[in-house]
Amino acid sequence: MDNQDKKRQVIIDSAVKRFAHYGLAKTTMTEIASDLSLSKALLYYYFPDKISLYSAVLESIVYEIDGELRKGVETIKDTHKALFYVLEKRQEYILKYYNILDYIRVSGPDLSSNILKTIENAKSLEIKIVTEIFQRGIDSNELHISNAAEAADLLMDALVGMRYIAFSNKQVFQLPADHFKTLLSRQKKLASIYLKGLH
Image 1 (tube, rainbow, N blue to C red):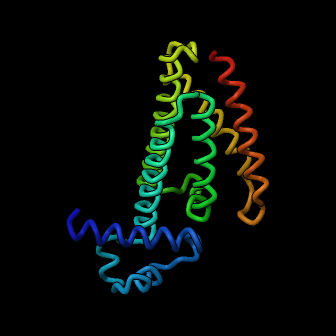
Image 2 (image 1 turned 30 degrees about the horizontal axis):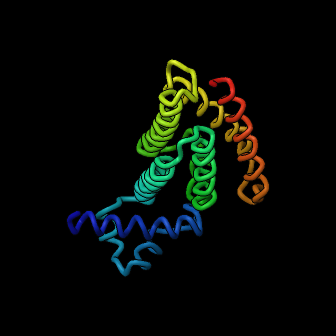
């Protein structure tokens, strides 16, 4: 990593902390520059506006989550346990970065093409992990299906649908911790029912 890449990553790391604490709307580029003792001109050299910085932050989080999930499921042989690990760990990250991720929900169709591309990439990475979990289940005769990728894609669509229903038309202050616990519990129940049909 050269000096420019290092500086860019330092800016992203600082923005992650500030966005996670205050949210995107309540954070200014001036504050981020001040946190790092940078001039605004230098900050804008790397990121021309706050949305481009947010896009880089989101991409960084996506790869952080993917790396953590892959590391975790590598050692879990049981399909149920591996899938539950993915659901639990994913929820941990949603809670950790809620103020960052909520911008996606409230923006709706007005998201930039870069952010939409990152969201699609996140979905693809998630499906890939679940596909690999299912494929291991097929290889060990735990699951009896012919197409792991198709089964993973279908399950993830169902889980995303549950999240959409749970979070649509709700404000941040209307989402207490038990709301997330209920959603996770329901997702686990759905995953269990789904997996039973694949045995």
